[in-house]
Amino acid sequence: MTALLAVEGLTKSFGGVRALDECSFEIAEGSVGALIGPNGSGKTTAFNVITGYQAADAGGLTFRGRAVRRPDPCRLQRLGLARTFQQPRVFPGLSALENVVLGRNQPWHALLRDRVPGPDRRRAEELLDEFGLAAHAHMPAGRLSYGQRKLLEFAGVLMAEPVLVLLDEPTAGVNPIMVKTMEDHIRRRHAQGVTFLIVAHEMQFVMSLCDPVIVLDHGRRIACGAPGEVQKDPRVLDAYLGD
Amino acid sequence: MTRPGPHSRIRPAGTIQAVAFVAVVAVLPLITGQHWLVSLLVFTVMYAGLASAWNLLGGYAGYPALGHGAFFGVGAYAMAIGTSHLGVGGGYRPFVLIVPIAVGTALVVLPIARLLLRTRAAAFAVLSITLMFMVQTLAYNIRSLTGGSSGLIVPLAPFPAAIFERPFYYAMAALLALTLAVCWVVRTSKLGLALNAVRDDEDRARGLGVQTELVKLVAFAVSAGLTAAFGAVWAYYITFLYPGFAIDPLLALGAILMAFLGGRRTLWGPVVGAALIGPAQQYFAYRFGASQLYLVAYAALFLLVIYLLPEGIVPSLARRLRRLRRASPAAATHDQVATDSIFSAGDLG
Image 1 (cartoon, rainbow over the protein chains, first blue to last red):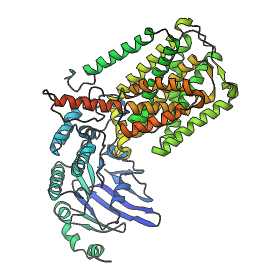
Image 2 (image 1 turned 60 degrees about the horizontal axis):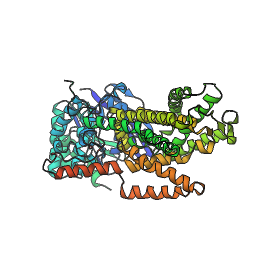
Image 3 (image 1 turned 30 degrees about the vertical axis):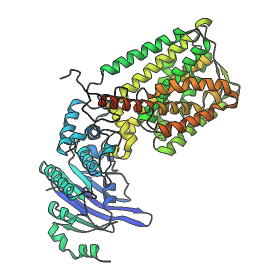
Image 4 (image 1 turned 180 degrees about the horizontal axis):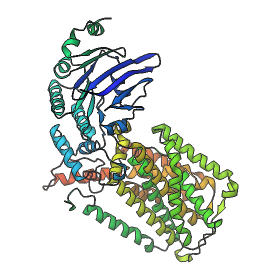
């Protein structure tokens, strides 16, 4: 299988701290990758740099076989790379339905068309239904619970039918049932051909769902492989349990 | 299927509101022959339009623009220069200038807007008001064009004294109708949805593929162009321009106060706010003009609005109406609260 996303030597410093230090990895098409590591190991920074929210100091990335020179969130999303955030981000003043509809890409000349055209509405309603949010379709997203906002953010990202979805801690701060729900959603979408890269802390979730597992420590990739191998890797044990 | 269903942009309630509004605005100046009253109406309608135009950028997109006085002044000076230097002629002909002035301002402002819109929130507010003072300083100093601090005179319109204000009133009213139509189109379109997304979380909107740069630029330019159009009519009505008067920081503040009071997330909010504050402002300026005490009243009102009616009058009223309706036997089935959605915000939205 070919690499859908290839990251080469990404480096990013904040003052004296190297958040990413020549970090490289690849995500094959059709896989569900995990990005794990101790706190502060550079996982979210990697997401931010890959999606163009922060500029890298060095290194580059290739997405769908194309070198992305200056990653830009809007352009990348239109190429099929979507992401969620660690703290769920929704548009609090818009209804849940509109939150999802926004995910649909629009050409500039469609800007004066209906705010929520029929086909988009139906598609968004399907997604809300799938994520168990249909009852809240017309509620302002700001009124949803934390877990519901996480689901809504995920649903919105799927509206554009992305090729690769980066999920930043989809299971953080939600109850065990919600973790299972998230896993089901990811599995269903994966079965439909969507590739995932997931930052997560719940090892059980990662080990049962993800392959490959990429381990970062101090901004460097210290291990990469099947969950079973990574778990036994002495460097990984050291990073998590060592000093 | 293209039949207008429940989700159509044009709703019966909205159509009735629009027709009623046009009828009221058209008849208002005919009721009284009192010059001061009609003059008050001219300014109130102008402020309703300015507040609505400001709302495109300040309300829908949430960019705290404080410098709309600059665009108003540009429109005013363009009108004065057009009528006195370019020899457009008198009578109704200067009104034709409104179109090129509005379009020209919208286009000229684009590169400046691109620069300003790289900043957000407080930085944007400061830069926008700085822009206004820069334009004011230019007006003081480019004496050959603006007359500097000695001012610029626009030829007095040759309208009959008995109904002198009417042409200006109807010009302002037509611009208000245009502004509201623009606001309505924006609100009910993808553009409005994108602007609301920018207001709520611009970075996430970018990550969802929303063309934030483009929609912000459009909102800025259209807002500025409409503001300039009002400035142009105002100049012809006032007939005397002075930089500190034509390019006034209080213009944006007044418009913002009206939008906030009425409800900046709604179509009619700025109009309601202007209808309440406009006459009061004129009255206070007239009574206490020299001491500018009315500014204190402004500040007090602003604080009250933010403290008691953070959403504004229109959304609060709409919610109360919905609650009443729900309490009645024929209760609505949806538990809807005010959002920007044209489908779930009540009929007043």
